[in-house]
Image (tube, rainbow, N blue to C red):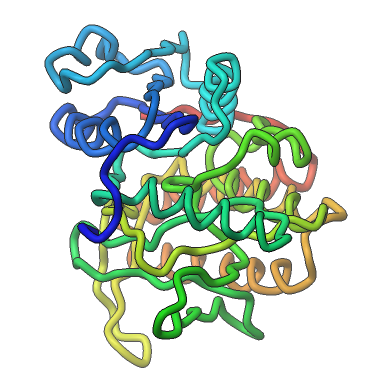
Length: 311
């Protein structure tokens, strides 16, 4: 978005989480985000490849690397990066996945909007951009809780921000002061629903999430795609089987907590039913995926923690 400033924003640290990253894609992300922030920290979740050694070839920008000895999950990696940013005196962190790439000026747009919202008396949990699907080029809308589905939020002409009920972690700008009030990411969840849980917890404490209407980034969703007809043609993202363990287990764990709102509980139940149908009908490894879902249901009911083996 060329109308935004592309100068680095002081007091913003980008926290990039990696696990077995694609070198070309990671290099593109670092080249896109480094000019927009004061500092970049890469937290590597136990990749086989030495990401720290490869960093110089990927990007000439200054990047601090925190190598974790094992895959501790995205929540633990976020917390490690946030702690480092805090020690460097950052005011904000920008959370980024290895499969995302911010457009020019995204960070400046998010920071300005965050400060304007706070100045207007809002308690801001996080603010995030609109994401553009790498495969289809489709620009996603921000969403609110509807009756039976997540409802897209339209951006009125001339309005830069809208209230939203959920944000994905990648691209989210969050102040360290908000982390002080809400708490860090829940490491028990490991990967799926980490962003949802944190936003729901913030919401219960009176902090709302916001979506920026003009700031954008490229983002990838799912390992496979299946185009199906469900009233209209839809692109259904499908994941590796181990991910379905966390989807089910973490949803069950959150359903048992007291702070998620009723609207989320209703929509998440519908979402899990849809995922089950999609896996049964379309997943190329449906039996393995269904087995992981049953394990997740069992561990969620018994409140067990299991990392499951990641590829």
